Length: 321
Image (tube, rainbow, N blue to C red; front, side, top):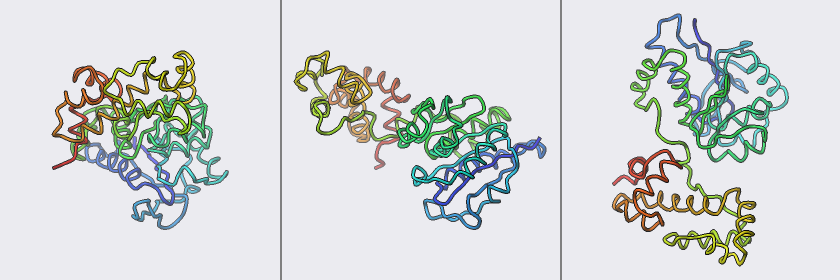
């Protein structure tokens, strides 16, 4: 049975949010018999050419009002300007109805914000681009955000993290539809991994939560960043804040949403990530400078927080020379 896939686009859409998933499903057709192939439709909010965020112009196959009544998969794409966009009641009413009538639905990157405005994410597990997590939480406080995941399936809802994670999600869907071998064949053709290691935290610039700049907590955070080599105990941190340890821990958690120990660990990881981009520094040197007990301890924390080792992070992100 042919599988109908719809991607919803708008002026300012991120081109790769559209072309990444389309290439996965189009390449899959090479390995599938005609009666099991994907039929791809791009549904636009405007007629005519749509200018992507990178300047590329694309044309939807049809206006969203001319779409089918249901699809095997509906994907809302994202774009840099999407957090500030409101496409109107008629569109969101149509989108809500289409998703409910379709077998599966979801989003690429911050396309989840489009779904959030329909109410379809309430009580559902979702992810989005790391930089739009707070916006999604504000738009849909009932959603259960799994911010570090590259993609999340919650029953018939499929959401992905930023941009290229749409390819990861599409390969995952392809595996469900036609098995791992077809997905592997497509991944080889596109020269990508069928399943990348780690979550999207390895791509975000900072893992630590910052307090308001004029608060005592912010002063402690600056103290931490300036003294990463030391133990940074609660006693030291509370002294820097001129508070009792108990009160300091309570105030810190209230202002940042994490414990002081979690902040310290995140700050060490942030500093280590920056240093690891310099391929000349030994891992034990990075560990020492950032306050880890040793390189083994640093590796354990990296694997737990990022899903990759320091060495793998360096291979992925160190400056090319």
